[in-house]
Length: 280
Image (cartoon, rainbow, N blue to C red; front, side):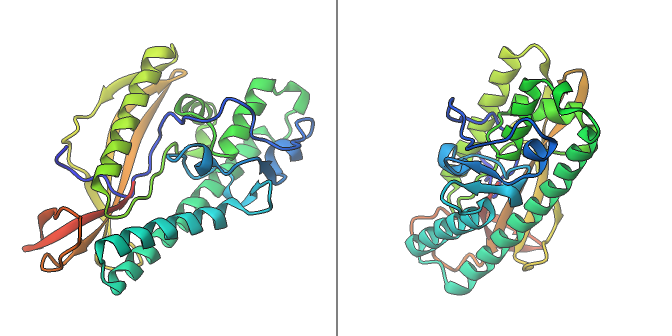
């Protein structure tokens, strides 16, 4: 592929362990299904490296007591530090990237938290006994980022008030090859879901060279570029949905040599810059 796929966030068919990761979940009360801290045996990123941000990120706990939000923050900062060290990335640029990663992590978690509130409200007042067990498990899996794309899309189709649900995220600064692989796997698993699930249909899949649209510079630094691109139009359980990819980049002075990192020279505002991926 000719295009970088950086800080990518979108819906992907998650590869998760078949056994239940939940520890002592109360499935008999509204609070147990929707509100209480959800304790899992492993963090979602330990089960699937492309796992999305959980739908309920501030109430997801590892069995050892570490919350998802903190654990994921530490992991992403570690990945950045290793990549920066290997590439001899100047310290000021590393600081710009880490600030962007933290900002995006917090932004996505807050957005999911709002979607989780909408999900709770949609079921508030419904007797727990009237919620079928399959739906209960689907909600728990969405809350914990262990749902696959079919399950996540089905939940969004059933509760459109949520507006959006993330199904994939991968942070790998300066690693074009890793992020391109993640994107290819996303495409493959989306097509596989289309082939195996009757009520999940791809109406239109965009070409791989479709241009992403720059949506803004974030609040962190003018050298960060955020873009979005429609990946596909879907019909899930009779509802029309859009699959949107979000990509984050940093632009670097092309005179700065990064060890082991292939330059990606592009024109930006009349200047030539080295655009490198952060995550997707």
